[in-house]
Image 1 (cartoon, rainbow, N blue to C red):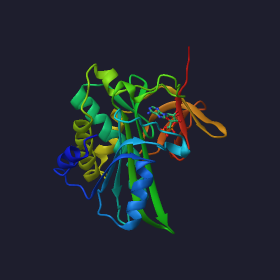
Image 2 (cartoon, rainbow, N blue to C red; image 1 turned 135 degrees about the vertical axis):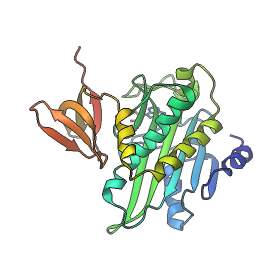
Image 3 (cartoon, helix red, strand yellow; image 1 turned 180 degrees about the vertical axis):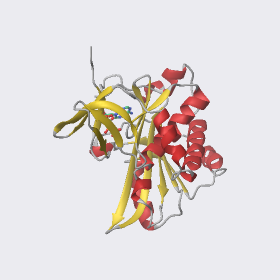
Image 4 (spheres, protein in one colour; image 1 turned 90 degrees about the vertical axis):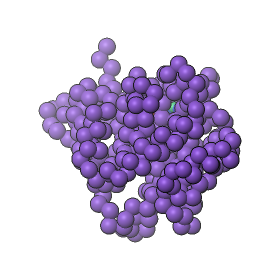
Amino acid sequence: MDIDRWQKRLQELPLGNLYLYQEVGSTNTEAEQLAREGVPPFSLVVADAQTAGRGRMDRIWITRPGQALAFSLILYPQAEVHPEVLGRLSGMVALGVAEVLRQSYGLPAEIKWPNDVLVEGRKIAGILVEAHWEGGRLLDAILGVGVNVHREALPDDREFIFPATTLDDCSGEKASRLDLLVRILRSLLRWHNRLAEPSLIETWNELLAYKNQQVSLSSSRGVIARGELRGVEGDGSLSLLTERGEARQFLSGEIRLRLVDRS
Ligand code: ATP
């Protein structure tokens, strides 16, 4: 990563401070530290490689040097922010990424609730939103994004629990990581302005993977529900029509979503 070139280009965007690294443990961890120190809103941490990239529940996220995008954006939602808005943040980020993949690269990107972006059923991007609280007061929210860009982003010898892919594989071309980053950031800034608007949930629903299909939801203790996936509600929760015909809503927390194989 040519840090000077990336820095110059990113300065064109209405962001806070820019922190660009060749390698960090995790951009989210770095961003959390910076947020505590009180950097301006929309400060950005970008790394060419992560040695301890994280997914949800401390699962690993692989970011190999020069192959992927890994960044974290720091927000300071107002202390009086409505919890409903907070539940929309993962969707907002997934939407920002999926929209760019659709509009700029012509890919049929979809959102696997709550936090992954898929292309043709394979994970191309992962999102980790982490909010930090002090008592009942929200201090900051870190929006972490990892996108698999070049083919070497995915090690050959590694099988993920969920199939993965890269932008280059999907588009058949070699993408510019810097162009992709700038596009995603512009999209995130736009969606952030519309965080409380119904259009966010409407668009999230339009891009939702597995709509009207049978899915299962599970936690670390096993399957907690099965049913037909109906859509996302205003607070970002997932609505299922269960096998018993009940409509139930689930907040993301530690839940994992899977398509039920009917074959
Ligand atoms: P799941 O994807 O299984 O539903 P999740 O949404 O909680 O669960 P994430 O937190 O988004 O998963 O990502 C962590 C998981 O993603 C890891 O357990 C690993 O299997 C997988 N993974 C790690 N690095 C990558 C990568 N670069 N591309 C795709 N998948 C990855």
